[in-house]
Structure formats: structure tokens, C-alpha cells
Length: 150
Image (cartoon, rainbow, N blue to C red; front, side, top):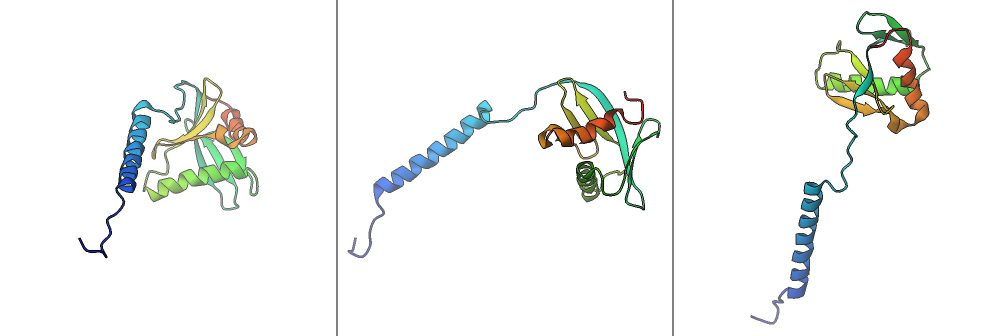
């Protein structure tokens, strides 16, 4: 070996290999054991309301109960910003994945009191409690607005 060629320090290579092995084994252990995973509790639905949302030309949004076509509520222009944002994001996802736009969304109250909305066509599920009490209440009132709930 000539003087200009230097060998990489052996201890550095061993330390790097040990770090890689530790990282892989820690990730595998976490994955197999479920350590650090967030899981929603398995709870049954206590109420389900299937709703259709339709935009009006004046900027309002009409909300209909899917089972009988009854008008549940009208969100006037400039109101109910959280409900509008959530529903537009779900509708956008349907458009992007070329899904049926007429399928109603499901507003679900769980036995433990949580509230969520889901899109059966895309499988998207949003736990509304993650956005705070005020925003959750904006959807909670739709659970009973306009009458019958199953």
C-alpha cells in the first residue's frame, strides 16, 4: 500500500454498522409490538345520520337527510366555516378519485360521545373531536337539526 492511500478508520465503520443495526431493530420492535401506535377505541355507533350537501347559486349550502330528502339545514353564505371546509375537502377527495358524488356522507355519534364524519365512497373518516369543542358542536347540531335521526 502506498503512502497516499489511507484506510478508513475501522472503529468508525463498526460504530456506523452498530447504529444501523440498532435503528433497524428498534423500528422492527416498535412495529411488531405496536409501541407508539395510535389506535381508536373500538366503540359502536349510537347514532348515524346520512346527509347530502348541495351548493346553491347564492353561496348557501343546503343539507338534506338522505333517507327521505328532508331539508335539515341551510348554511348561509359566510357562516359555518368549519363545516364548509370539512365538507369541501371530502367532496374534493371524491372528485380527485372519480367517485360517485351522490352518495351521502355519514355523520356518526359514537357510544363514547365522540363525533365523526365519514365518506363511504373514499373510506375517509374524520374524528371531529380533534378540532375542538366549538368546531365539533357545529356538526353536532346537524345530528338533530330538521327532525328524524336513526
